[in-house]
Image (tube, rainbow, N blue to C red):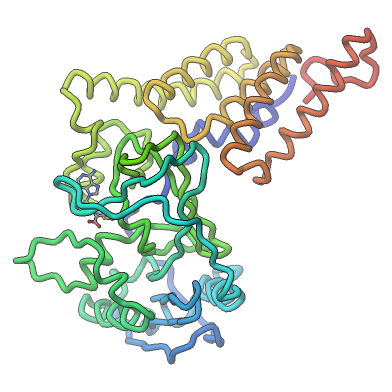
Length: 414
Ligand SMILES: C[S@@+](CC[C@H](N)C(=O)[O-])C[C@H]1O[C@@H](n2cnc3c(N)ncnc32)[C@H](O)[C@@H]1O
């Protein structure tokens, strides 16, 4: 019998919470990892500005800038001057090599198919000016300000602000960042740099380290709990691609989810208020109470069904796992949690294959492949296994037709 890992393998990620569709997230700052020794190389076009940290081990924190990055739009990084040796590759070295190795002229972005418009109760937002086809990448944005996740805990507030002022001020066009939305009340007198950063930064990892990052174009997109687009961050070039996961029509607002979007309203709304300071007014949160309760129930069901599918696979109950995975997919479809269903289709294929139902398995694999292709993911790590499975099944099925199963895979062989 194939193992759970063989059946679920890579797509298994999809039914675990952390891998559910969820674009950029805004996580609280996790606990401090002490920095350590490392010299700063020549990735920077400006002399770094550094400020001592009052927190042990009192490593200075600096604002580093490379004004050539992203077609001379520039990028600034705020981080400790060096990190300790717990990192195989220091996060700062990783960023330096990314930033200094990229050709400043390579930044081709799709022609804008959207415009910035004033939205009711949400400041500005992005609205499609053309039809954006499901699966198409219609925006590529690059990190412009990055601040190590520990910044607020390692620096005095005033010092953090000074580094932000330097980091933003050294960009070619500081207004591109400074004109983004702010969320503090005017009477709280929060300095603009800090307010803009707090309102617009998203949490992303580079290697083993988390950074808060501002993507000036993506920052104009409002949040929806049932969004129509998702972002995909690429840590090798600091780009963030935005893909439509259903057709978006001209005039429609383009939205992403700031939280993992499987969450029911009881957990996502406080999270948005805590992390982003707003009460969500998206169409899902604005549903009449009964409809919202029904949506919450579906989301909870999706959450429960994922682990149950895994459990059934572990117990070798493939037939029941198929039934449950069908229910899971139906609940996701009803809830429009559909960035792409490739992972789920692939699981169906593997389950059918494990049961010796080769024709059905191939049907599911083909659907999975179609989804991956539609979302430009056919070259993603792990999709080769799917390609291999499809090729193997074609052989088995063709061998079966001719009555010759020799060399073909038998029931349960994956
Ligand atoms: C990253 S900005 C998004 C763009 C912003 N609306 C602007 O004018 O540039 C985040 C801010 O937009 C507003 N916002 C985004 N999504 C919202 C939603 N679903 N409901 C209410 N306000 C929202 C909040 O004020 C939030 O602090």
